[in-house]
Length: 239
Image (tube, rainbow, N blue to C red; front, side, top):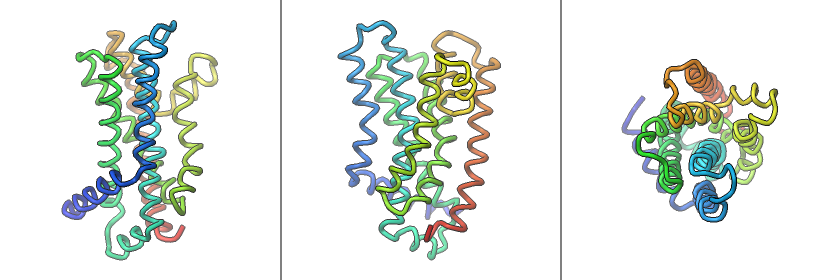
């Protein structure tokens, strides 16, 4: 992997992000919800700071990899820059590395804003950041695949919606139904919730639940990378 190429792609991607209004709006949604919950619903039962924090963080972890990342890749296809990159022998791992770094940085910025707006405790920050990045990394590969499947930014939003719902809804409703609870364990957003709440509640960070959560994220990373590599190599240009 040529790091000079990756760094050039990263600079280009950040510049495109700043100029893309749709992307900026999507990025702002979790933060706006955090402000809304804090100032309008802070006195409601069950809407304490910890609940708002994990709720909005889950939104950020889901939205950035599943919506913004596909939008970034679809924009490359829409402007035919993806074709140019592939014809210039930019490897799939280089293209993916740049997109993933931008995605993780955007997620981290969003998550940190949410953490401080929701009044997160400093002692939980390291675990929070680690859980956010791990869950986001696990989701980013399949988000990248949906970007390759889309022909333009509009279709990227449509195609990524099922993925967004699959990874955002289960952890939010896992306590309502036994079946949903079992399904929720299989998504990285639930893994984030498990690891973060274990820190908040003073539980063992190396307990059984956290080990399962970590394993789920690793499984999504491995499977996602293989799937992305296949799609980029075979259908990245014209799909």
